Length: 141
Image 1 (cartoon, rainbow, N blue to C red):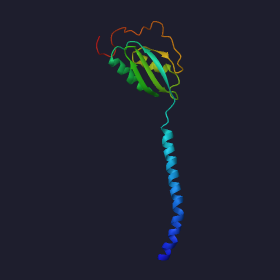
Image 2 (tube, rainbow, N blue to C red):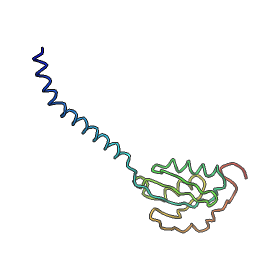
Image 3 (cartoon, helix red, strand yellow):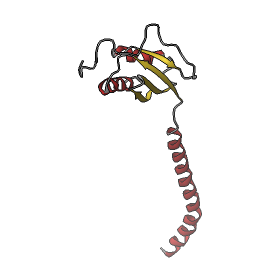
Image 4 (cartoon, rainbow, N blue to C red):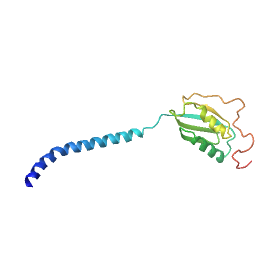
């Protein structure tokens, strides 16, 4: 038995560094993969002008509606300016008109004011960013 232990110990001493090196290497690869998956997706910003947005209820409806669009990462509503800034994943949303269409479908006519390239877009003719028939979210007149 003592002779067996004498044979095993040198083998273990020889194998242990190899096992530890393999364990650390596997941990390093796993950590790198986890960090790679946390990389931010490519994003861009679009600014929309929104008609008929008069209250916090309207703003909340627009914010919820845009968050439901696949690829939208962040929505900031400036109620007083009747503007909505959208940060989106450019791999998913390739046409910013989708954003204006989503808001318009909620009952708030919207136009793209500034695209991802920083280019300014004119408002559509007749757009005043004013309330045309009371609050559409149902909060009051």
